[in-house]
Length: 213
Image 1 (tube, rainbow, N blue to C red):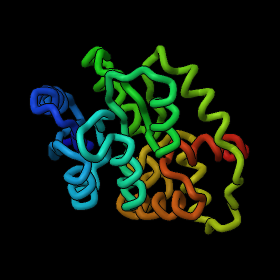
Image 2 (image 1 turned 90 degrees about the vertical axis):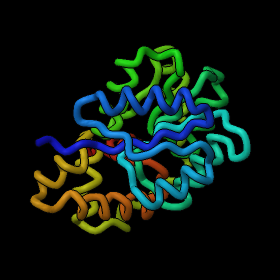
Image 3 (image 1 turned 135 degrees about the vertical axis):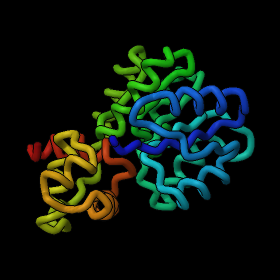
């Protein structure tokens, strides 16, 4: 039996949460492990459950999606986080990326494409709605000012970083390095923390630029 990747839904609209929950549970290889109606609830659930993916609404009352995203990263939640929103505003896209998002999808995205995007981020890739690709690519290219120091990494952590840059999932990295998937997850957290990155996508892009792929 294939292991399923866990997804946490964060949205203040009950109907949206229920619809996404049903879609995810129908998708092979995915399972919804919970729904959060607010940012505070999302942080608590993510810290407790360490989901593989967080599907996060941008516009929520109280703690906004961006504030929730920052809080998740501050709490050292290294789940892949996809911002799921109606906003195609350039500033929103760039702000989400800077806060550590691994993807940015518009809510008018076809359901099949949403499921494909979740699989994509699980594999360590950046996922974005097609019409926003140029905006996000431009934002990524501008984030290269404070250079992380690769010498702070152990040899094992450098192996992990190289595998992240190649787009491998934790499970595949574990197989390639002959270590447990849980051990890989711990190494990934350490790599991101040492290099000052908020997501594995950031780390992957930087590593590729360093010629590590």
